[in-house]
Image 1: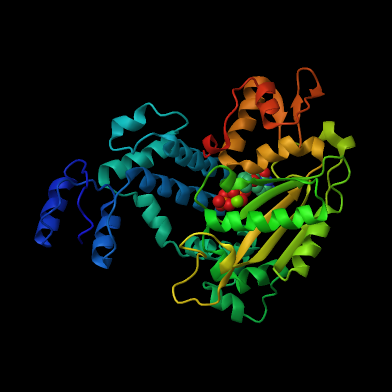
Image 2 (image 1 turned 90 degrees about the horizontal axis):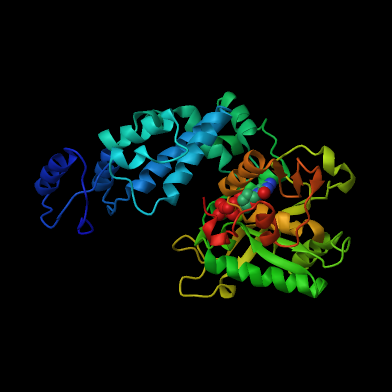
Length: 401
Ligand code: DCT
Ligand code: MG
């Protein structure tokens, strides 16, 4: 391929690959940087362009190991692999040698061993084994459907089902409403959402919300607030300046989206937030605010830029389905919800661990509780929360852990 111009190699792989590439008539390759040989040779065979970024390769392996541990309900290893992926993401450059991982924080023996394997042999035998594992493949496929979690996926796998087609044609399987929507819009919602598409949705949501309540407070959250180019959905937070006025707001928004003919699917969850129960709260992940998980119809004409909608080549529908999450906390919880829903998940997890271990404080999407002083610390902005934690403010784009 003409794409190979610059590659850097480790160990003796350079010689092997050099000879191999020359043997295949590639004369312009100046240097080699290949650490995952199987991936490289597969790419060459299939004619895919070869650009190598070791960091991403190791990071991907860590994500896959995390996912596989999650399927096996091994919470500890799952978090360890996710943390390792996050550490790699934070590095200014790719990891090329064993020395480079020696001083890295948060890496356990197991994750280090996997990294060493990749850096030494160009591959992780463990992850290759996992990739070939029938159960892993099935669970990964099934959980890629909106509304299907690891438990349902496992149930289907145990019934001997292996493909999405088998699920759809198995008469004894009862899909719930969310899963039916997941299958119906599978091809669209498994495609990444671009920044331009997120922006277009932002305009639609803003217009809708402000048509209902001109003084409503609305913010883009999730990966797009962190400046990501692509995401799996678009997340928004909304509230009203006056406490209690946010009640019923989401239901109005949903109605309005339906009236505009762009609501393809909606799962609404009312608030289970109860201020009086605040001190007895468990420190937990899922929050209690009213929220809705939507699938919206986005028209080609609404997306700015040359590339427009992310759609399959030859798809002439002129619209695509996009997953959108709306969350509506009361205004006095807004800053905590904004911090939580901006993510990333790993950043949130690390911040909560820091709060607990270093400050004896409990932080979640609803509140910050000081265990020493036995009181809740109020916040109207994210800056207030960082200040309570004794940390410098961290910009959303710096929270991509
Ligand atoms: N979050 C949360 N409580 C939930 C779900 C999510 O606090 N029940 C947080 C974690 C990250 C953030 O909200 C957004 O969630 P996602 O959309 O899943 O993640 P993302 O960072 O926006 O990534 P993606 O690009 O995949 O959407
Ligand atoms: Mg998101």
